[in-house]
Length: 374
Image (cartoon, rainbow, N blue to C red; front, side, top):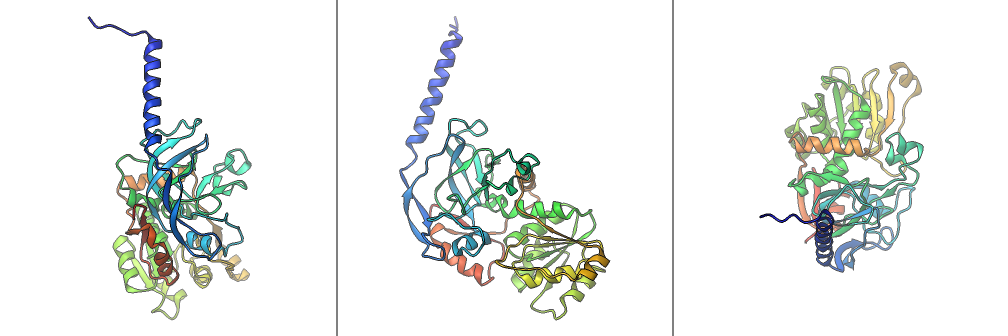
């Protein structure tokens, strides 16, 4: 005959099992880890052993398996933005991995879940911007790889509220760039507010953000014109769905070329390029009533728009920052359904310096992803 245990005994037994599992998980976490650290902006990038961080009550600890390399990481290292970084700093903000520990207040993640660490590590969740879903604009925002040690390490922490939920079994290397590049361009396309069938120009279409922007735009029913330099980037953008492509290194009159390719100019422009000249040109070639969305953040850049033409064409210039939690979930859903795929090259974490050099030379098509185990 089956003997039933009292409810209190069952609860105690379950609790004991959970505690044992948690203790085992903690016991498997090393005291130190490999990371890339710099101690002053523009200083040496040191591949060294540092302590594994302990999660705060509201945080999860993620064993980062792969992390993308964003142009923002290069700015953080150089320190050429008006917002100062913490020092010393572990950069990186496109980390995908597995939850190995969590704080006492965390209810939304369990040990073993797949999680992503984004640019927005945490926000106050109570200011006027957070309340309306604009958490990235929070004045108290803590930023991964900038004001909070990021993902260029094997173990990193994130506020559980802002951490991304990644589907179990997802390709962690492939999903890593979605956590910043994907979310950022998806939010930019939403900001452009275009209708299916309209033209969108992606300036910087062959890079890490641009290659994803082409795919998201295509999946959203837009006609895509890619703009970038070089045959490799042309082939990549075209393969990913760009209907037209213009190589700016081969064209003398960019404004004319873009307007001819789109029969009067694109209805919207997503500027992920870090060229101030390209941004200003986009204001000239955009169609009347069009929208120009600024995403790339070159240091000290200024966009020029002639007031007379700006008013006469009734164009809109919009800034688009990174997406919120809803944007993140939607962007990841496109990935889960196979509608977007990160064109990546995987190298070891210790190769970050070489990736930065290629990035500065404009020689990266797609996205570099670092394997933290190497």
